[in-house]
Image (cartoon, rainbow, N blue to C red):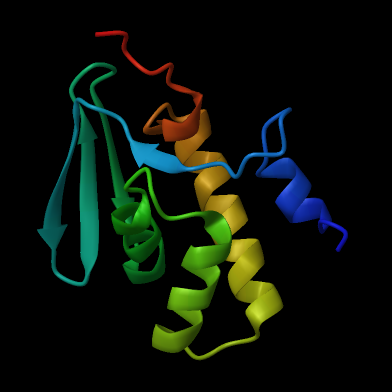
Length: 111
């Protein structure tokens, strides 16, 4: 099976899936139907709409982008290709802002 362009972008050099995780220092507060995210480190405040808020909540270090698309497809009515574009664009923006990181890139601690 061949990986789609999105899957290749969301994989690291070893082909492991990217596991988006909320960065420590970023907190979320519900605000009406939206979610306000505040980053203590960079003193950044952004407001996420309901679909972006759902993507943020899925950034748990375990859920892949493909899993997010599947779960959002059950919640939000829409074309799966558009949902995938929205997930990828939202993850890209959250990463650019330094609000998420790849949980799979962390080195295991040696005990």
